[in-house]
Image (cartoon, rainbow, N blue to C red; front, side, top):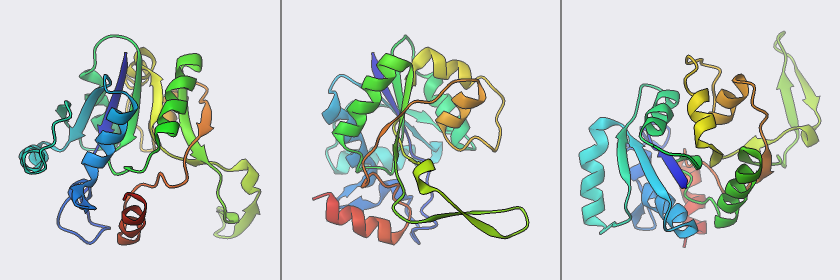
Length: 220
């Protein structure tokens, strides 16, 4: 069984908007709907769990009615941090199989990236999509200086991050740490080796007005 947990807890602060960014319109439709549609297009039988702040449930229901959005999904209340939101989503899933964990404001993930992640996770237990940086990379040191590092040794991490359901559920029983930046870091903390697959460069996390302009040009 394939499942996806779509985590959407953004506030829209960096976007300069009062509307939570996952509800902002991208070419006439909320960003979050575009994201859900990508996973439905990949597999119409996939089980979709949407994690939202409890106080956004009614807004989301109204948007679904307004846009005649009919893709079946389950809505789960989020937590105080992404870690707890993902944990709540995982707790709502029963059975075995594979589960993807994806940012709600990454609507430009390609079907090929989703497929690569699920295929590799089926073979190896987990997979996360990454891309190479195109800019030069520097690392800030403890004495407030910086040093150049070889960008061939650097990967930029995206979502969906796909895991064996039983495996990632066990990993999320560990106590929360602020060092957990994504699901891979939670798994790695529990001794799991993370497998990398190719992402797609346009699979950005929409955070700023410039990101929205880029997504509007791509998502036509």
